[in-house]
Length: 118
Length: 111
Image (tube, rainbow over all chains, first blue to last red; front, side, top):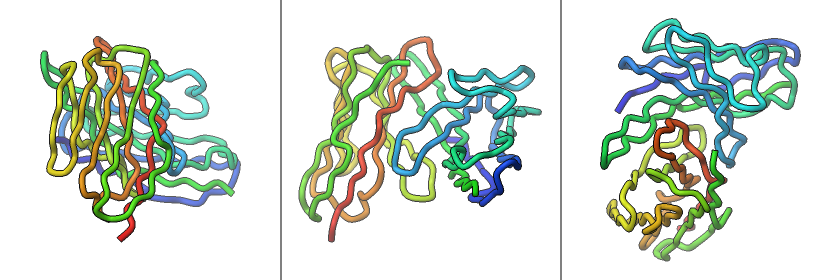
């Protein structure tokens, strides 16, 4: 399975500023996914990032707030813009999703970025 | 995305005891995945089940996919402190790359 390097692992930011989170994958992947997670809770998909096209955002998430870049098949960034305390959360990138007739390879996740907005 | 109900939300047991986590939905999934997440880390895939009625064993962990592919369970035998973590089930519908995650079960195994 792919290995993902995500950084920063944590940050404390002032409200009104922006933070860019990076994910580097050790192999080429078609789709990368960005999730948000409150500690100890479930994951919510923010958007799907495809190389060479604009990201696809889920309901409740917009490009102006969470711009995503996908310059090549091994790298993606998520920016959390104009932050407020409500943006405090864990942000995770993910790759995977290959399937076959009787198999599902599942997903690999980065270690996450714990963001605190003060 | 379909709703996956996961229960219980919290589980605290003594080392050596058994535990079961349930994942239920009214929707049919082409596959069901189980992940374990430890603090400061991302979820790590434990298993995927694809065939209705399928049972998979991973050492002391047993995973079952319901016959109708709407539900799944995770059973841990003789739990150890190293089993402590957040357990997440996630379902995928056919022709959809997206996952629907359950709310998660926080398992604490006391030594």
